[in-house]
Length: 201
Length: 173
Image 1 (cartoon, each protein chain N blue to C red):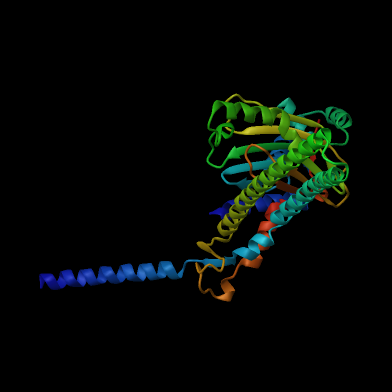
Image 2 (image 1 turned 90 degrees about the vertical axis):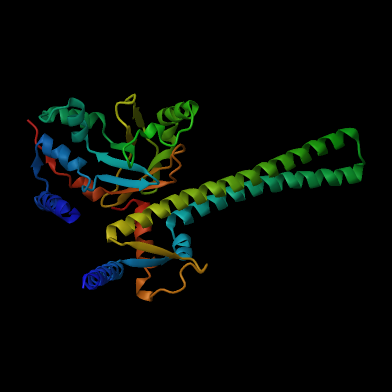
């Protein structure tokens, strides 16, 4: 069953990869980046909690911000210039069974507020990106509060980092409230360089 | 005649159940791992151990400095005699040393406990992920306690699992 599901995805990935830097329209582009089998989404489950880290190219960020699939190239270029040197990631923390992660393992209201406070203001100190010999802390970090609408905890972060050609780099997360221990997510610069281009107008 | 048919029916059912159980059992995929080796060669354990040793060294360094100061004051007391001021300073330093030492001991054991919990959580999870990915039914842990007295060498998955869990820890896809 699993193989049957994976096969079309592998074929699609193979097709996209073999076409080199083919252009994808907005919808395809988002689907490509968000696909769990893509090299940009990396996830780990530890003790009932799932940590999902996704690399977000500038084009992806613009599409998501504008909430539309057709964007002018000039806008992408302007955003790229504004955010030059920044490497964006989206982190989602969720429970494996889909319950509210902010209340996961919580025994009192105080614990809940402590968790919110930590995730909003302290968590970024426990996240770093390691590229070559550099360890970089997030220059931009935002906890997206949903006030109970979503059971997940979502974060956007950006590192002012220089990726070394053909080298791997890692994002390290060592949270203090879920106590999952140090989590490492490895990415390859080559994969990032070979992302298909976005069709713009 | 009626009892004969009933007996035959029971025998056939029992045979069927036995064969089903045998086929089911013999088709189970069972592997084992050397728990000691798995734990000690797990990259996360090595990293946290290195952090722990660094922290401990730093603490020991602090305590050694305080101890030196105490020894120095003690020598001074022996040479110059017990003036109230010197005794007060010595007592303050001694209290500070004992307090710090107790605090470090408590922190050390707490840190050790936290690290062990974190390693256990990730190790268990990754072994579980491995089992699911490989479609195994059971992975036994051989730890030399007698829980697993014998296992065929070919069923030892320690090396394979070790590579898998270390890659998982590094977050390599």
